[in-house]
Image (cartoon, rainbow, N blue to C red; front, side, top):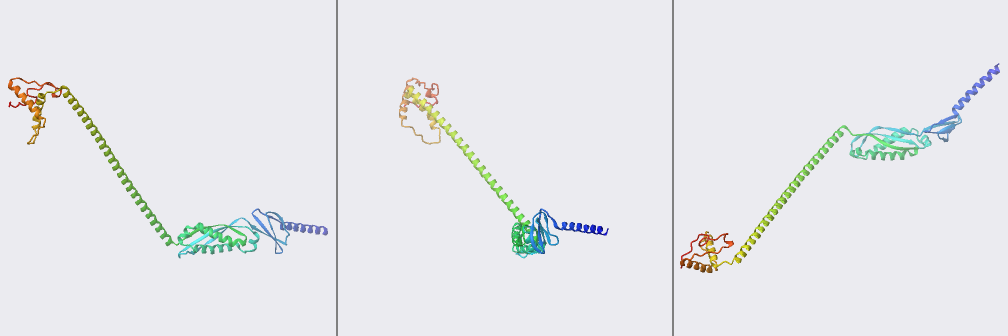
Length: 334
């Protein structure tokens, strides 16, 4: 009986020992992890994700998270190159590349990365003017990432990116910047307004000039057309008069007027010649022939014969009255 109880007790102990052994020997490494195995305090190997068996009590397995992690850099005050104190904080994103270096080359990576980021952030921002630091976030991020990546390479870590969360100048500097920005915007508004007024004045002047040019061109065209019309009228009248004179001249020659008829026509024209302000009247040389004809007419009156002038188209369309149509009494016979 005692032997049976002893055998059962030993069996239970062996079973418990086997369970503990299996629990300590079988390890599962998850897909985002890698495991470092140490045997009696010495690095043995690195396990990839999966199921692994180690020697309990002799081997020690340490898992390392290979996912991207974040280091929140606390806010700190930094003096810029132009002696302005600004408050700066950042966020560092990193991922492990070598679990052995990360486990053996640095004791507390989070603390080391935080201090390293604070120091280099102070150096990078301290070399810039305030305005440059406020507008050069990308430059600060790239510079700080490069510095941290080079420094953490021996720790088996790659710095993926660095992001500045805020850069805050003092309240008085912020107010001065707001006033400066408002003044700059007011200046731009005045410049744009003046440019608009200048362009409007130029457009109005151009419009006035174009209007004056078009008006002058219109007047010139009208004057030209009126002159052309008057010239055409004068040419037409002159041509008509020339044709009329030619017809009259031809009719006179065709009718073969006698000296008596010419004398009568001269007598008809004498009142028109004498009707003026001149004190002297010059008669053409050919008047001698007319005077001879007048003498002949006088002799006819003296003899009692009534002279009759032949009808001519140019004499007003009818026979002239005695001694001409003008009603001028012939002079007495010599």
